[in-house]
Length: 371
Image 1 (spheres, one colour):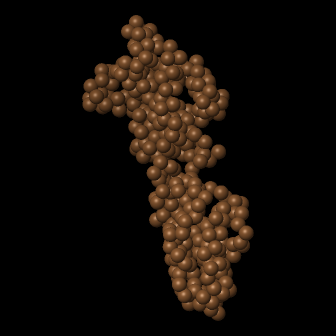
Image 2 (cartoon, helix red, strand yellow):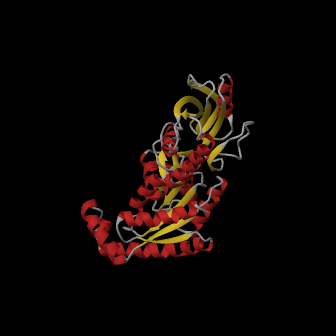
């Protein structure tokens, strides 16, 4: 998956498939025009790569020129096709083949027909590399096409998203899968924070760490932070509804996120149910819970090493570490059953290099996206 500006795109059409489609078009045109010298007119900016490779594949004499039109802005068509570069001169009595990168609604084709209707060409035809036949509503036939595709926004091989992506050798499709929301589990030292940082960048997810949220609200004296502190100061547990409200605020602050990683919440079955209820109210859901599993002895050594740097007392005492593990096991067991019953619990080996662990987590997430 690649990121252009604020959007993510996944592989769609390989370079090899593109080259095969171009050869198919070139061979078909060659059969029709081998006895004359046609003029190929590329439509800028998108078709420049297609024109270049088409000309390499075309075996007979030809000429080439360009027109420039524009109808796209960002992800959508403006509905208005502007002529930015006029038709070439000296085309009277010649056969002209328009080379387009992609044809969808047909507005650009109509504009091209209007442009060439004022000339005295022998004939002109249209060839396109990608053809969205389902949405094409033009009156003019598309004479040659390489690959029929669904009505999906694509980038690469000359096609862009706000000018990025044109230089990609393959074609990528806008990733429009449903929002992915994860609960990340792991014993102290399992690397939840490290992995959450990689996953949030890779998949445009927002990492919501309950500990960070509490600290932010208390430090900044928010209404919820003041309320939570009043319970903490009395040695009482902060009620689930207060924590949920803090999480709700974090979710609502990030409307453009492709999903969320919840870290540190839920810790009990009651909290898991409360989180489900909140997400349902937002027409969202937990898609998966992922536990980073690691051998206790390995984690203890990790934490003892971390304690030398962090200075945290609970990372320097092996008995305290083992007590934290016992607490995790006691609380996580019922949560595992809760999410397992929903088919949402996944266990991932948390031992190995950071890259290997990220790859294992990514496999789980990408399987969810493929559903």
